[in-house]
Length: 463
Image (cartoon, rainbow, N blue to C red; front, side):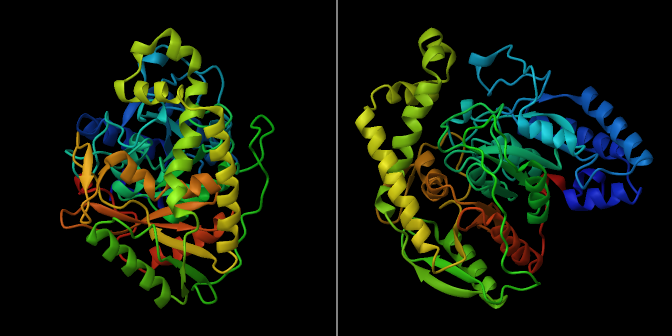
């Protein structure tokens, strides 16, 4: 096994045992990027010289005073919305050409303090306003979409081009590409990871979180990045509660949705996710049927919040340089100018009602388990999907439909691989819990992951 094939946990153990140096690990990952980037297009910027210099420093520090923690000397990537001092933050847009970050985002700062080695910046759907990341190809099938908007981060991790990566999630933008590329993605509780120095799409829905090879990897990254930041007005301090210590799931109640989450999903997605839920029961969990409250309003609330907030953020540049935006993003931003204040306030009111209803739902369960997305990776350029009930749905609407509730309500949501379709494309299961029970979803995900074979597997091009 080559160093780039190691998960974060495996690489960290090897580094701490002095069996692998940070320089050797970083060189291996950089060589991997060089070998596959032409097929994948995951990166906007690869800062190879700076990464190697950081790896040399990490090796010196570890040899001297010992490792600072599990991330010390581990190569990682940041989505191209997340500032790192001296490196361009372009948001994968011509609007930001030449923009270089003057200081670290809080997330980059915390990862630097933990000793992580920054490889570079990964592609996003322009300004995170989309669900496909068209610059990037799926790691499992290059003719298919990577998912978005953290598509570059997901593909880099899936292909061995980063040990872990950071993304953002406004309507599923961590979980969608993670599911489509067979990696783990975590959208933490709203406000748990600060967004200072992160380009916004929709401030009341934006989250920052990790994409990694295993659930344990994601947990280590969350531990390093979570915590209050007074510069982010939404930032909070909250415990990551886990009421179920031990090696099984006895005493844990898993909610299985009767509505919404299994509506209009492919048979292969339903079969894989229901099989994974049954596995949770075999591991000791009690399955409880639940009704998803206010399901018919989910997408209206998501778009009612996101569209006007995004347009407000881009107001000046949209008027000054509209032609620099991609056509799909410009159309959405211009649509936001037509949203009335009354519509936005009604969406905010509905969001409050939805949060309350979800809190009551979680009074009877500990975790909600469901598909992450209703189908696997679409063909590049595919605009719509036709469902068995005769309805036609835009690909972007399909991908956001099952992820949006966790953004609206702010609950933690984890996706992890649970199977493949007939074409060998990954399928993801989503686990959600009440706010600040991030450790609960991570624990359930880890117990499941440890019970099945193949966790942390790279995409086939890595074979």
